[in-house]
Length: 480
Image (tube, rainbow, N blue to C red; front, side):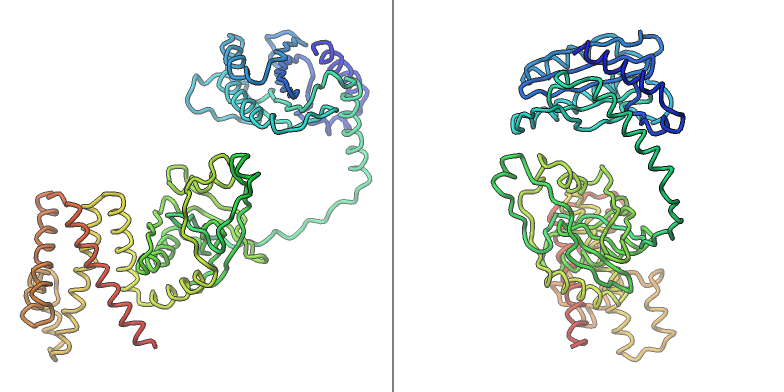
């Protein structure tokens, strides 16, 4: 193997010297074996799998070739761990392009090699399920750092002719150089228009459409890989909204805050239908792009600090699937009806605000943050009581001046409102006792930092839920 690598590099350099400057431009940096060049081969079997790390360190000899192995695949972790501890990796990271960002560790080239070794072990996990191949082939080539890259090979490259492998690299470069001379210049195309939006995953997670059923092969291989499929596109408050099969939802709103509020209005409707759903935090609603022709989500993201991140991991890392074993399944018709209902009942901006507050209160309650849940639920209750009080005064025929005085929260606090509604028979005696108890707790929280129990938060949440539900029932009954 060592001799093979030497002959390969020497042939490549000899042919490279005979190339024109134009042809050399098409020899990729991932095929750069110019001097000084050091080569580390990591060879595992069976079946054969080889990884070639190439570096260009000025303080190490040219054509310094180290062949590690062949090792049995089952010894890969032990062998690579010992090699990683060798002092030759403890050196600064080369500067230049591509720029490498290191987090944690020693901040040296060793960290880069460690990451490469982890990738090698992950790659080796699939080898027992791969049929041995007769002719070595490239898996892929990848940069590790400036002036450092790795080749992933399947099979035993030492069985191939090193001159032929080198000449193939040169031939491809020459062919591309020749093609570039004969090809007609491509006229500049119009920039592709896109629709800017924001979105994230519905959480707890759902399937929109049918629940996917993995095959035995997919289960046996540790999971399945699913491309996100668009299941719905429609309009919500004059904005395009798109949903994928795995519950990723994007609304065509460029302002993150507005997009978060709009998405939470929709989530609140699901909560009021008796389904568990958490609010979108502004941090979790990331920019997304919608293709205007296909109306598909073409770009998106999820911050790693969000629990929704694991749903992103499901897409790209089959061994993590499923991160959530059981999801609610929402049919396409149910999803359409959900969006239509949200579009209809949130036209009342005050009701939409209360729905969002209720959703936030529920989310905090599910997270055992009872104080925050209680305060947000009380916001819904207090706003409702003032609304009932204003309507009562108007129905009683009071003048605008008197109504203004009796609804000014500075001089007419919520305490007076509850007392007055009780005297006016607008709330029952049971409701009066419950409201006064919650109002007293609210004052103790604000003025004395009183803690809130789960039972107290749950009572406030139920009261707020009843208020919002009743308002929606009245609205929908009026519309029909």
